[in-house]
Length: 95
Image 1 (cartoon, rainbow, N blue to C red):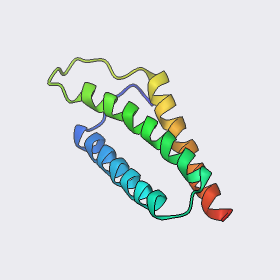
Image 2: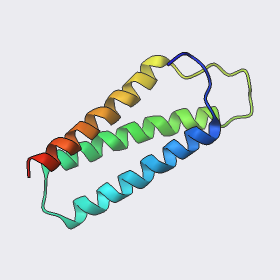
Image 3: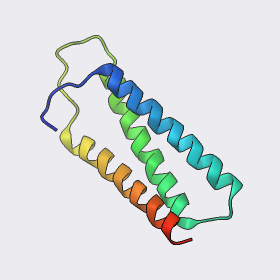
Image 4: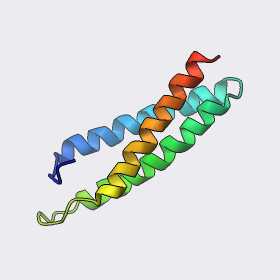
């Protein structure tokens, strides 16, 4: 959050882990009874993932002097992911 560029490798790893987690959540949703909180969490994770993939695509160019992504977008990306994670925890604890 300091307007500094991080590692591209770390960003790609972050996206990979997020995609893997979303795939595992989707597998659980499709093989279990319907839980609205899990579905809502999956939707928020998908939106956060799409936003994160846009940021990753913008960073993968070879231009070294590109400005960092807008902080409002980064903040929305993080807020969606954190809210989705809280929905997962809430769904898990209220079975």
